[in-house]
Image: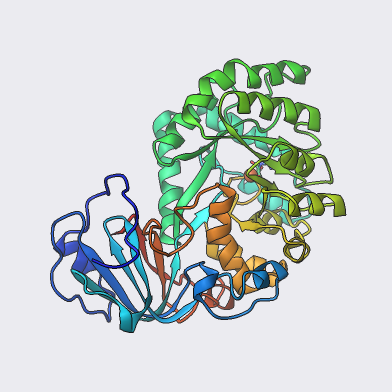
Length: 441
Ligand code: NIG
Ligand code: FE
């Protein structure tokens, strides 16, 4: 049908029916010609005022970051008056709307902005209960501590599978409405072999990006025996959990696990085929970031307290720094220095860290607004980090961009540009979400 056809790919999910295609038309949109029922029906989304492709070779603009400038322009690969063609579950064409090929269906974006769906590469969504009282106490001056995790562990252990799954799907639906089309989620509120394995089994029914975090804190069942708990986490618990997970994570922090324990846990996970990522340098300086680089972790998450050596190590590695401003917001903590990381050439991702203790938000747009206002990121950098950056933190190349061959995960904003995500904080701007080529919100 068009140049730029992607290579052979796995069988796509069914394409929208004609009725769905009509629903897909925006309020001021035109749907021209009914859809074919074949799964390869093509859809043109046109009249896009500003399209974020995340292919810097395509766009205009010049943000501040030296890393981005070295790419020859905006990292966002912005195209004005643009169109995208979706076929099945993939993007097959992106470009100037006047050059768009003929398609089966057509959606008019009404002069609004289109972006890749957000990639939320860090969340903790399998839990029960909430920690309203703890949040309230913090807002009256009490400090955040890792110990609050025990409250959620008790509630999670007491919950049924159905209750945990209902909570997970509720937060996922919330995130999807706000534009998240890929999410990672973790265990870490069970801390027994059975409770960790069931959390991962429930998570794996909803996403491929599942992380084993048996090493969230030392289990309350091992009050005087952290070494015994590390043995469990690297032994029987790992055996039970590895089949459901792609990743292994450790909370490397005072009050949780030290550098040697974290190395032992991540190394054991690697031996079982899991890939490491680390909760690193969140509440204090420590060995987490250096360990992430040493083990070629996909991501070091939080990165709030960094030495110059930590920043250098990240800049000279493949490890992404994932910043989680919802956590600093909700714990009234110091912001991570995103500017310092970006200027050093570190790849930065932005995610929600959605969890009931330190960051109870599922909203990537909220995190973008915080990152721009309080972490000194430009709107371009923040949007890149929440899309392509999240994909890099999950070592994925099929998402986080809108170029031929990418998964057709995209969002339509009720705004003329992506900058409005930071310029209009708190406004529900995401007005359409497609995942794998199907309109889902
Ligand atoms: O990423 N830091 C460790 N884990 C979570 C917090 C979990 C909790 O407080 O329940 C985080 O912030
Ligand atoms: Fe976290």
